[in-house]
Image (cartoon, rainbow, N blue to C red):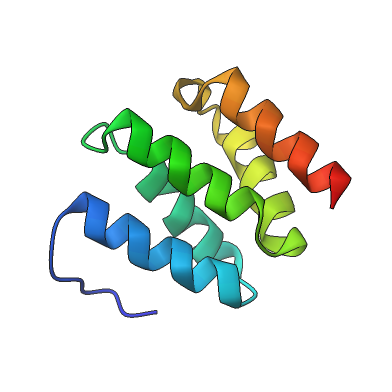
Length: 92
């Protein structure tokens, strides 16, 4: 995916989420999505909706995103969103 985006953090995160929903992400792609999701500039409801969208997407990406959130120590994502993603991932 292109390194350059027009628009702010919401547009960039939305584009990355759409990309992540349709293609297998490598390590760099997962890190990019996690960095986008954890930006303080993102409105909370948008972050939550994007996270839920990703949780319903590709299993391989969801697993990688959840693991990266944990290993990077991103607690600001909030336990409810991470729990939702894990539950959704288990249910299939």
